[in-house]
Image 1 (cartoon, rainbow, N blue to C red):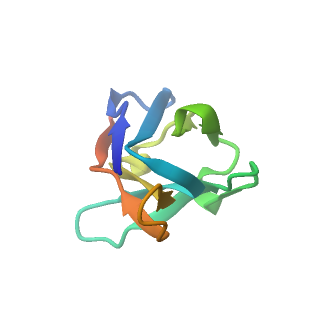
Image 2: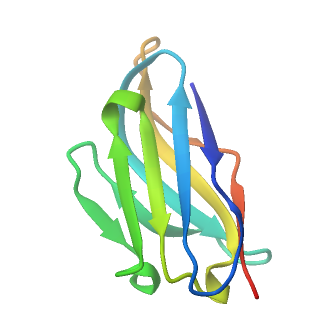
Length: 120
């Protein structure tokens, strides 16, 4: 199973971006899907997470500005980022708790990361 993230880029402060992450392969179930971000020299931090049932949680720094959602039929998670600030600049990674069709052994997988740069 692979996770592939899309949608990063350069945006001005106050602008918006939408990230997508698609899981592909033989999948039995996907549980929680999340977005993390990492600045160089800093630890990777949780930005937002969404369970298979749609419950969400957000880092305090993005509450009210970012929205996480998912399409279970497409095995895809999204992150809508509004009112972006320079401090949101980072590489964004998707994470998903996946049970493959075979073997049915749950694990946490990571996408390759997509760079978001907020700058004027």
